Image 1 (cartoon, rainbow, N blue to C red):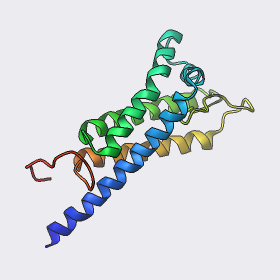
Image 2 (cartoon, helix red, strand yellow; image 1 turned 180 degrees about the vertical axis):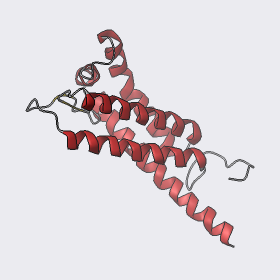
Image 3 (cartoon, one colour; image 1 turned 135 degrees about the vertical axis):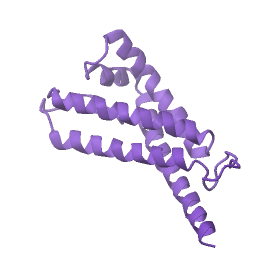
Length: 162
């Protein structure tokens, strides 16, 4: 009976994880997709990529986030979408971390508000909050990779034991 209870709890935790990670990705992607010029500017301020590559990434990123979000929320290809989402979160951790280390006065642009900070100052607490949030979402993605089959997902549970 204990194994059934554990599987039941895991199913609900997977659903919560899918909705949490998918919801964050959807909100971030949607807000950036509404203003592509601002999204590309958000990528450029990190000064990691050549301008032409940063512009392409700025146009593609919102739609990648929305696509991954929909897959997670609906529960299709959860393992793959969790892997890609986790990799994306780690990329964000790296990008924000290097911006903080280089003392770039920017906000993350995660939710469509990218660019230079209004006061032109570096806000360490904001960088730390963004890094911790993305590490937490990476952990959620790891959980979803390990336990991809949850409540109300469209993926069929494999015959493998989890």
